[in-house]
Image (cartoon, rainbow over all chains, first blue to last red; front, side):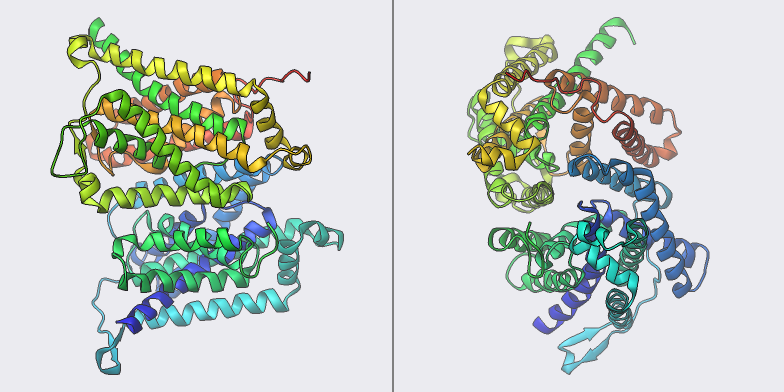
Length: 286
Length: 311
């Protein structure tokens, strides 16, 4: 039971982590909470649905196209909205993001309808391990492998490339990074690209594990924010760690409380963190 | 539609716009004057609605109470419980950056929805609470809607007066100073946390009362009765269009926004019946685009905050 929940938590946690990395970097670099991040995630999942189910392309190709289109959408949001509101207070830019979230979600519902959708309707035989203690579906193995690959990719990008280092520097201290001659416009562009790709991947993995529904990403927004705050705003590694903690806690909590309160766990952890150490585990002072 | 029909529709329209105006005045206290980011308005709304429902309905085996108390107690109780909730939300967040409050209010609105959905002993779950009494019903008779509108307008007048009184007092001056520059206010020895908390709690009290008015007007509350983000968002549009920090502007903003929102219903109503679900989403898209346009082009709203006398 606990082992199974741990596995489910690991899967949910990886998905939250992927979304939270971008959310945390946007927070660090552009200094606002991106409330449309969950709905970008949903959009990525539906883009993949469009290409793999409606246009019958193989899922890996649909995955890549969807990720690129979501990255493009993220940059469009920045170009049309956020860039112009930067000079005003952060509440203005955040309410604009809330508006973007509602627009995206309702566009999705308009085009694809409110019903549940699936990439693949065939029933999968789970692999049974440890005398039935653990059941794992082939797609879940795929999800774990893919999310690990993506996280390692993010790590290599952030630690080995010049652009990645610039991103971390800007997230850590924007003013200082600018003095050292970092091209901030370029860093901002690639931050949105990376966040778009990661959150779209998270959405597709979530849809592979469960199903597609217009509210899916919005439902993960609070867990993603909780992961960002737990790990420390602006810290991509903190976000990865925070995502896993939140995902696993949510699943394990069902042993003690009703499963309908699962979303409350992320919230409870977040409030505890705000009371004890608001800067997060790996974050700077707030 | 004949003249009485038009008139009664107009009264109905004004009542709803008025209930939203209470919410917008409340948000103006929090955001306009104190700079606080509350995107969980729906949560405070729901708490207000349910509190008065439990306090004022006839005793029922299906949920807590009802306690059959007078409606005025219901309104006050709704405000107080909502204010208490704001106190709890404020404790972990008001010492931190404004975004933490935003995230927390979204969270609390979600938790409240979960509680009212799952705790049947408290709120009868998804079935909701019906039979919420209507004030002065026997007295008003067929003029009931007009009487209710007058009640709503009275509540608006009281809150408007209190809010204006507060913002023109030394208390309001400190609040604005904190909004403009927290460090300066701190250097002047002001307890920033306390002032912010007072604005948050006072705003939440108004939201609770607004929620209670809604419950008495419709006579029914359930967890799915209104869409949380949509409701919250409409109140924000009212504030931004009217002019954040200007109570009069916010009232006008409420009227305009509610007019536009109802207007989109007329437009999408002309679509064939097969497109009903699309029509509902189209309305939200239209109002969302409208907000973005206002944010980009008219940042201070129709009635910008007035310049206060420096003396």
